Length: 328
Image 1: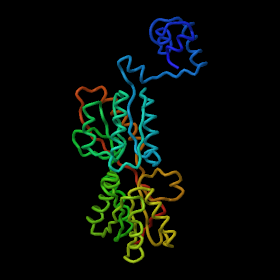
Image 2: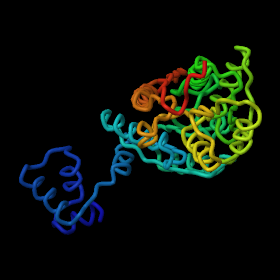
Image 3: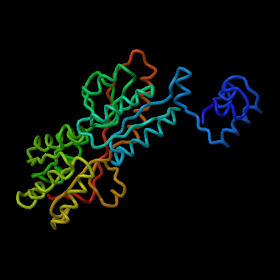
Image 4: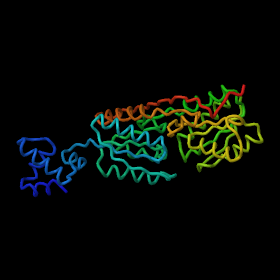
């Protein structure tokens, strides 16, 4: 049902209906109440995006999100929605998963632009800086979550370098010297790649030995890492996400490898439901803070001419758990 349909039903002009629904212009309280009552009765839902565009403004922000099933992305989505509502902004979103080359994600950004959104929030690790750069000339665009190295792209991100350092230092501090690292490929997940690369670098810098096992698919590297536990004196397996950590724990259990007695296992995210009950040693990402800062920055960008570029990186909090132990 449109405003025109509602006007015909009431026998009044469309402009009167519009003023009543939007709370603008001169109209009697009796007429406004009549219009609102009829709208409720007939199930009329205002198209806020179309209304804002007709008025020459938009309070709608486009959000591209990757893999909302992943707890980290799901939590980020919820926090962005809450923060946007507090700023009287609407979010229209596109979610894409299983898109290693980023082409579906780029298509999603174009669809959001077609809705004439006021800005773009790009909350995915699957779009490169080169792929994102052309959108900067369309609307204010903000990278959310993934670390950004391009000096021309605004970003509010997790400090994945610091996150990787914190996890590596925790395991090193527990006395582990031969450490397996599940190393996600750069083009599969850039944030995971930064975390695991930083772990490897920090382990090497202290004189300990990292055994690196590349991973593209979710289960890659696990068999090799556990083989190293059984045959190569490896005492810890470090994973770039909690989901990979759970996969290692599951395979270790199948093979009869006890943790943390025989091997310590770590992850990163800290957002899995029930993760605290499992005692995961992990790092909790600052999702609520990231969501709030991203919306605040988007509000600034939509009011800035010309845009200024800022990079803000927020570190997470180490969560020591029972899946790792001190061996000194």
